[in-house]
Length: 261
Image (cartoon, rainbow, N blue to C red; front, side, top):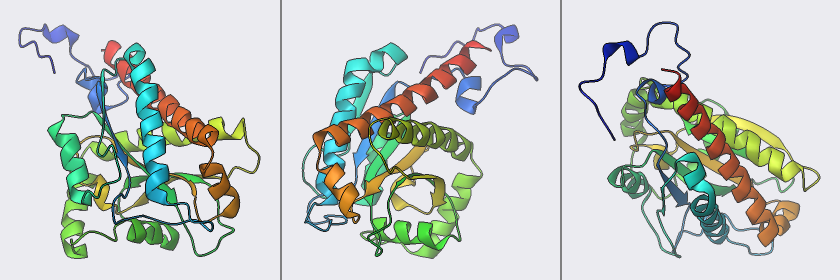
């Protein structure tokens, strides 16, 4: 992060300037992205009707996304991309954002597959960290938080601090761009796509990064049609391309705001 203490005060943001985010106001850019393939090792995540394991799908999407960023990211200023795991291993939820913090990441993207008792449930949704009373969102969070040892009382204090920070607004922007781009990308190649939107839930894995952080539920692995799609390298690639397009839109937005100072 570059600083210039001698910078003329006239170049600083003024009231009325079109600064869309705090990062833009500070002239910060998206340079490092950490991608988190959910679950791994003994934690398989959800399992589809024919045995497809969420942990394996998450890793495939994450690796494809990493490859796309490595190929095209430099065009939008992203010069570093890391995975929290490169293979089938278990990593505690709290450690995943710690990895992002250690690497001085600018964005954190956790990749998952959704699941529901009702096998007819399907669609794509993106989450940010927050409180919610929505039972469906809480059910998703409960499943994704299953391996944590933290109690709800501890989480409440942590999440309240997060909500008071600028991070939540940036996460909303990032989540909106990613959700829109993934749905658009999938819809152009597949029929019967359900845009479930951007939602809030208390996910352990999104706590502690102090940067814009989102959790993408790419499809319902519990739905026979979507499980079949998730087995397809083409579908995995389409999801990754959609996430990358969302990252690109967010990065360009931050860059534009930075240039408008």
